Image (cartoon, rainbow, N blue to C red; front, side, top):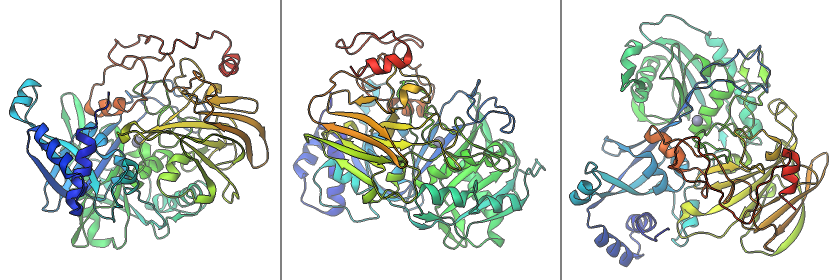
Length: 577
Ligand SMILES: [Zn+2]
């Protein structure tokens, strides 16, 4: 049960202190007394670094059908490192799970100035929990933009919004480990990756941002030789390779600094001629550039990443502040939603002769995070309304849509903002330069909680990968919100999109579930790493028991809905009866 306690009020207290506002000081005092601990506030720049594992085995793009699933893959453990670079130059490593809870929407804060409230754990508490006495992250708030008057948690969350527009100049720096001579691609290849032709990064980001951003002025430089061998940057600890991302960034940038002008650079793509730690990385890092410390967006790419535009664009997405999305099967694999570049990079993708696997579009929720969905393209239905509306939902890929391309179905706001849910609808179509290999033309539903969007699946239990028929809502089919707050019927499909009948607030379809509060689902294995725990901690709520042995099936959660054993298609239809 959520208690209106630590995290919520720590955030309010922190913001109140920062604004010198006469806000819930009583709560702060009560809270502080209750914690019986010391609290301190640190200010600085927040740096996120996401690591995405390479597929263990993968046929060459030229020989693999674009839509063919990967048969064997890496352990699928995403990594997330969270650091605070304080104003006086210290680096504080934050626990990723705690940081995500404390910030509500951590990814929006990448590279931004923030204040972090730490509560020192008392010695007694530490002893009781058999943990080291360590500071606990209670709240993270941005301090580089005006903060609106404090009221609802959602307003605090809104204050963290960081729209990205205009020219976002990136640099590619190619760096060789001192003990590896190979140069997989010439500089011209990396330079042309930024072009505005189909299949190049300039073209892709302009298309998915509806022309909001460009990569104009982006250039490539190298190859430079790093001062050290690979083994000095990638260290084996506890049987696993660990990459020193900050040192690699500083040394590669340092090697390029004498002949590169970093003026106005927003992002740096590092290209390495050797394997890193089995991951490609994206986020941000700091280094001395042109004589002063700068902290741009950053990516770290081994050859399998820079030879394929899709993983490279995924890492740039992290740089822009995009988190992973997921499907709703409840497992620990966050790379199983092929409707979003920020989840499944490889499946249902178009192949390019020059640039490998092309990126699919990012989901509408991701575009919206970055301010690319203008008001006219978005329809938000507030929670608690009672109405039925016929709405044309235009294809997300339409550059010049004159209508709605994203429908947001709001749910009641919860006292703990981490518990607030909303649903988004978008129309996807197999067409164009990046979307032609999608699983189908359909309305896709995502459930968003905290910062993660989970694609919804009518199959029970949800499929391993959301390119199944039951994840696509087509003409004649209907989706109902698990608690009966909304029902969406797909009436017809036209040149520009689908016509939907959206009913809100009439208790329709109670119990019909698509990955929300009721379906039987597989139970994920216990996470092996803190980062995996972070990923698992953000699996959709309401699933089966999380601590059951791997491979077991959780007990059915919703007794109102009997098991359905029809064919998958019938099963989907039956669920709506
Ligand atoms: Zn990632």
